[in-house]
Length: 419
Ligand SMILES: OC[C@H]1O[C@H](O[C@H]2O[C@H](CO)[C@@H](O)[C@H](O)[C@H]2O)[C@H](O)[C@@H](O)[C@@H]1O
Image (cartoon, rainbow, N blue to C red; front, top):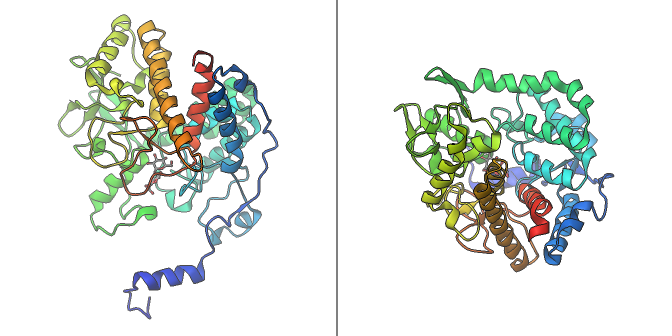
């Protein structure tokens, strides 16, 4: 910096990086998962032979997305940006070469169907260790992600694991740290609205996101950007209109849960695929919301929104902003939340819609897989067509792809006998 009077050119910066940093990926060693089996039982339940072969390829894909951190990172952590964790894990893929917190829920879902229980156990232990080290689970497994988390999925992940394996001792032995993560959210990410406690994403650190430096010197801007990233929806018009915020979220006029604008004390009437996530989380109050009518009202809302009419799945929003968490992109986790929110309601009309969304999503992902060379799974898809990856935002669409593969394996497992 002295040589360049604190004004290095891009070329000088690149030359410094090349001569002082190792190439990417050298923090890992080979890993051959010992719990990987050929021909896991879920494949035999898939009637369509093309889908069965595809499911098999995705099951094989866990090996190429698996990573084990080498011992030198443990011994010399200051030389690396990756957070040392002892157990192997599955990464999303592409530019995302570390573990990601909320992505792992859908990865775990797929791994359990692939019967890779030991891998899941290790991944959960890694997360529990991060809670112990940092008091929260960082957005991703890099030291520069320590200031913020992502949608809190540790408890749902442990729930998936314990239900699949019956390993209650695992939970018993780690319950204190699992509770510690829950307390982090209660203490640091809640606000009181109309006498209710609401959770929100809120990262009160200034400075730009370290992984995506842009140089705009505005503290509030940075806090908003990081809070958006903590939501996992970086970025979307959902965060650009006003601040985001049971009963406070339920909107009686629309018949659905909406984001809440705390500045203006009112609902924000925009379609987001997350609007029906209370159905998935089963956290709505059947008594005050009159159980029987809620599902019908939500189905009518979805019908009016037009979001269920697109050929390739559910869009993230209906705003075409050029951001990646907006129309016309569909993301695997949002399809999954929508499908199981509807499926678990046990209402016949809702279950039919759940199947329709799952089928459209599979058709879209499969066509894109078949049409790409080499055959690829994508981070997101365009849901206004069949067979095209999504786009927009601050980086090119990534291939791999952890949560996409997990959701496809889950849909094939659940609906494969009807496809
Ligand atoms: O699939 C991994 C994650 O990918 C996106 O976000 C990540 O990249 C952003 C840009 O570098 C970064 O700001 C963010 O914090 C990362 O998580 C996606 O938006 C995430 O939902 C996803 O977990």
